[in-house]
Image 1 (tube, rainbow, N blue to C red):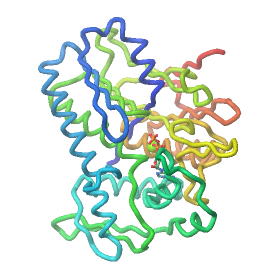
Image 2 (cartoon, rainbow, N blue to C red; image 1 turned 180 degrees about the vertical axis):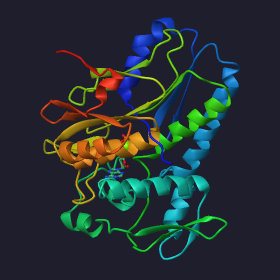
Image 3 (tube, rainbow, N blue to C red; image 1 turned 60 degrees about the vertical axis):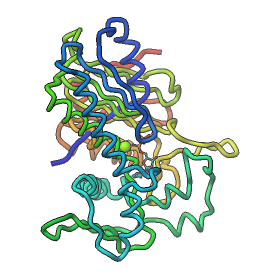
Image 4 (cartoon, rainbow, N blue to C red; image 1 turned 90 degrees about the vertical axis):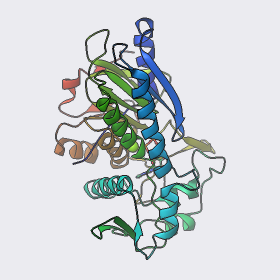
Length: 337
Ligand code: ADP
Ligand code: MG
């Protein structure tokens, strides 16, 4: 019923450096979307790869127009402007991602929270306006529970906010959903072996076409983001990473990063520097990478162990690495220092 996904800049670097020498015949296209670069690499043996790439990127652009917080007339911005206290019709894509997000809010006990758009805007992390807000400003925007409803009138899905401070924001899951939808389109075009990378989200299909083996994905070292801390081998799975090194600013020597703890309104500080999730759906991975970052190692790993076919690699603030119990299914190999 739900989706998943993953992976970050280091994974992409590894993919490039690990495979580029014999990838000259691979079909690759990169476009800027959702504030990051989206790269799709296909097997050279694909039939009509250009048509497959055209269709996959067209789908991604369609979804960006729905979920982008920075495109003024995105569906997200329309809904945020009109859903307080009134039913607002939304697209099936919007309803689907909201429904999945509400599920992840529930199972993460609010650590993942798609209703904190105002808090995200207040901090402005990743923009030129990034600053530390006052405590009163933060407190006034702490989220209420159950403030968003999603219903169906038999024809269209309807969204309604019961709290004036609610603004939806899908920054922690939209890339995962887009990766899953691009995969669907590629499959419909007969593509079997491919890799899709959206910033820290990596989705693999099939095998590396020239090696006839699983794809090797590198996991960024959050304490030295140009290096990897290890690799996993995946086939038909997503690998998604969240970390405190992706978007942040510093004030008086303190780093303020972009993953907020909805219970405090401040950047999450649960003893982790990076979380990587492996699962079949990129959307699932994306939601969980953010949720586990906020929950911390104990609660985060408990959540991962509770979910079937889902694994995690956590990089602690002290540099130690903790993994879920089934990580060896993906041949996790740590780089030795
Ligand atoms: P990235 O966008 O770098 O892949 P994440 O998937 O972890 O990283 O998403 C972080 C983004 O999600 C933030 O930039 C912000 O827009 C939003 N966000 C921050 N904190 C939360 C949270 N607790 N729950 C849901 N979304 C969040
Ligand atoms: Mg995420």
